[in-house]
Length: 276
DNA sequence: ACCCTCACCTGCACGC
DNA sequence: TGCGTGCAGGTGAGGG
Image (cartoon, rainbow, N blue to C red; front, side, top):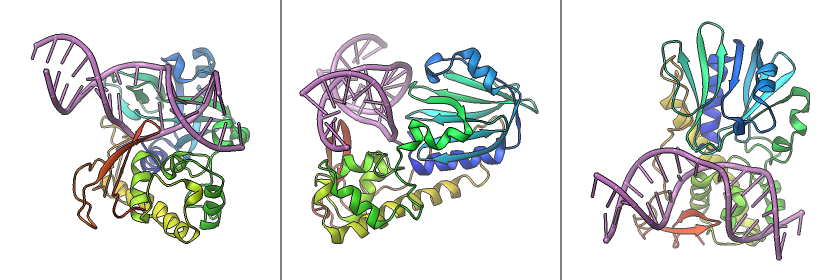
């Protein structure tokens, strides 16, 4: 379920709690979680190593290990990491288990089975298919109004679908795409290439603002995020959205009813009066 | 190169 | 109570 802010919060929590610790052994319990590995290969490449650092690229969470490899993970819709003590039972959908030093284990659970993992060489990380094609990070210098102008101009898709394309803009998902368009006053139905030049700067600002605000909310809710037995969460940033899941409710700016439409088989929420 | 639809799963809220 | 339907914060594969 997570978008960039949620993934960032999880990566920060994991960095705090598992960076520096050893993976004694790893179990791949659902083969399709890591389709490029066998269970034996997964275990072999992750046993007896130290986690140097946990970080994020797009919506991927990366565990850099001291054996020259990186564990690349994606939570997709329902993936979560949970840190458990020896006495805790595994959750129902425990698809990978990392036994750490100091008697605890990090469990990847995923009700919907969409999550993905793979183990790659750290030196090849930037060239890995799932990383290489991602758009620049939204808070990097490379991501700018000029960059947005360039990529918008090449796309005939709706602005909403464009914003969900991680190769154009990375980090937005279904919630923050709707929210950003609302704050920019842009209609989700407008073609990306038809966003007027003057309105690109406000869109750029809105993208950064919605992500920043969600990050701030996430951080404030989880100041000391990880307690053994209580878990490391993947979701739970619930803010007061301006439009998301507000179909039929009044727009905060003009009072007219928020609409829900389907775009690319997903819901988009918007104010038809404020967003043109 | 782009664009569209479908597929991958379980579970929950809803209406009959 | 059960059963069908639609929906859920993501993305890749495979078609045109």
